[in-house]
Amino acid sequence: MKEFLVLITTILFISSDILSASASLILRKNLPILSFDEGYNHLFGDSNLVTNQKDDDDGKTVQLQLNKRTGSGFVSQDLYLHGFFSASIKLPADYTAGVVVAFYMSNGDMFERNHDELDFEFLGNIRGKDWKIQTNVYGNGSTAVGREERYGLWFDPSQDFHHYSILWTQSHIIFYVDDIAIREVPRSEGMGGVFPSKPMSLYATIWDGSTWATNGGKYKVNYKYAPFVAEFSDLVLHGCTVDPIELSSINCDTTTSNIDILSSSDNKHTTLSSEQRVEMMNFRTKHMTYSYCYDHTRYLSPPAECVLDSREAKRLGQFDPVTFGNGPPSRKGKRRHRRNRRTDSMVTM
Image (cartoon, rainbow, N blue to C red):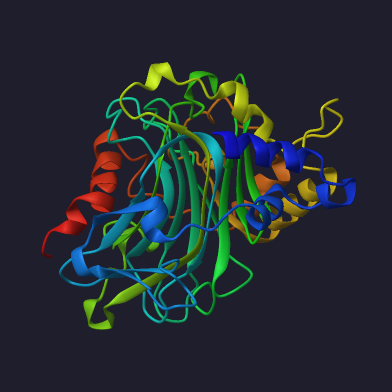
């Protein structure tokens, strides 16, 4: 906690030139990179989780593998209420249909009926087709409303490491790719009580999502291309840690409100500068292929927090949305996907 306050205080006094950079870049450059043993525990997958113990790495690179026997995953040792969470990830190459790599926060193991979740999900594809990125937000068990967005990328994520980051504050959630904001979720009246507000752990997993991940389940995992290997490095875990037993005895709000490092003390700046917001909108115009706000198959009326744009609606209309089966996923279906991440992948396939 003390180190967290010192860091945020230091960042608030960085020169205005540096403040023009994204929060993701500033935090990644100033926060420590943890080794696996310092910050994480093995979640599942036995020998399919491999840490690099070379002298120049010191256990700071982790491989997660999926084969016919099992997927694999790891989880943070601590629970966090707000903070910055980042990893450099290199995804499997070649034929990856049905493969899902997830980098996400969740408290589903503690709050089964009213969990919160922040997702980066990477969806594999057939040879010659690009990986897709999906972000999602759940709050207070609102699994009846999936807030998925899906994007292409301007690079091949299987050829090199790229940075994926989540900044979670009391007022905003921002997803970053290579320090470019790709999605901002503000705490709004429309979202009401479903803005994620309970402590969460950080997870990373690789698992078999054949039933839905690639073209709605049309293409399955082909294990003749196994093992599928995802690599994680530059792991950053920073926020307010919370006692997992006496949750009510810890109050993090007064300290973590200052993690919004782009806001000055006189509130002249928003979480994203105007330049960063333009950069985000350019990304979304070029690369977003699906938004739940425009999915008339799933929702007769868009969820209350959606702000609709006729030009965006027209552009997204050219894409086959390939949602998640026929219509919206049920609560049962969502939990099934969550079990796939943690449990189903543990058993022999």
